[in-house]
Image (cartoon, rainbow, N blue to C red; front, side, top):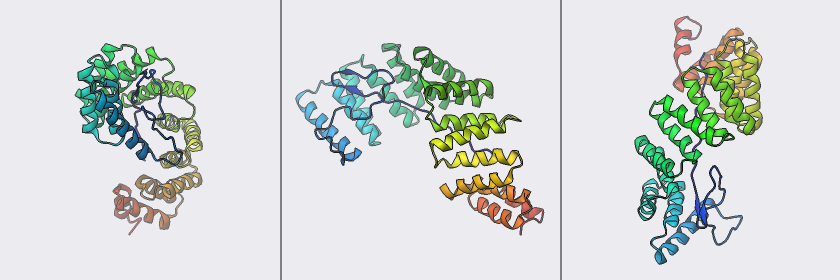
Length: 316
């Protein structure tokens, strides 16, 4: 049976406040330039538009304000206007070639555009200016991973951790690379450390559950981790699906079917959940329920079981 794996990497955007640089690893929840009116009812779009207007006004009087160009670039990035973001970072860098944050942020845009060589170049420039910028190592690691250079990715995540031993996301990302390399002990170790540092991140429990699920005899540990992920995020369809698969492997088809059904309720187009639920019904001898599930899975693009069942005369 197929397990559904979801891979995500956490990247960071540096906001530069007019008074100085943001602290390494700090996550800003407000705009880089505070809106004039912090009305609770204001939408993020309205806040961003006000920030851009404020930046435009500032730049009319001071066209050499590198930090304002950087801040405006951040807002354009959030608005998914990537070319405008790059243009603003370019101006910030032209004014101040030692502006590490602007290189970092431009690298993030190139990363999003899939231009990984340019992203790596910018992260490297940010690191040269500020060798203690752990986020730049983390993000450059992602760019290397995206290019298939796993060893360089691991090296960068390790450097990020060396700089900031409490960098939970770097442990998480390095664990993902270890998974790809089949080094499951190291993968689980990194996820465990990430959980110790950030116990509210559902995806880490989910991925560690996947790592346990890949090992024979560790279904109970996998189930425990999937359950924790679900407790944090009750709408986590893939966690229900994979927990169902773990129950399936233990022969507990009732619990498996229940979890597959919850995954389908959350995501009615979850082909793998239909496919696996069909297999669980088949194991219980309920072909009248298995066949519709396999048919639905095939409609969603997963046809192997449906075709095999028809070939063997199990389904019409």
